[in-house]
Length: 196
Image 1: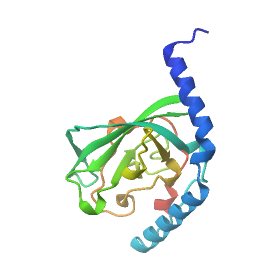
Image 2: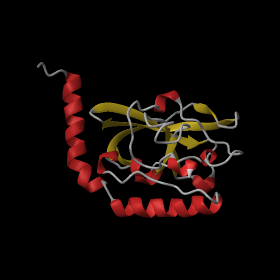
Image 3: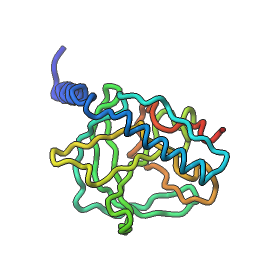
């Protein structure tokens, strides 16, 4: 088999992910996140019982990122047919299921000072509408976690449903086409959270 530049790049990404998997997977951190989230949702939406996939190190990924210095303002359609404005903060590149994937990280525009370090990744995957919520899920990131070596941990075990999955009246951004992964992410919050 001829080793093309693309195959070589895929092998490098795969080797990096294998080497970092033990360092990036933090079950205690995932458990703390999930317990806090379950408490918040149960109080905000009585009768809701969030359920998560079992934490899996496969979905705790070290991604490369490129910061976007001069992003255009992006208008997101939402679940309530309104528009919300964001800028692209960064573009992530990583391996999942032996495939090279990209996701865009978004920051609220204008930036609310209470959330000045908050950015998020809205995404849809092959479980959306089946095992997980059809409107996609979110991953929260902290700007201060973007490392100087252009790496960041992307832990899909912390993926969660937007509020509009539990109740009408919320203005939830719909993940853009660029953030459709095309693989099954069997991690994070399940659709059972809504059905129970």
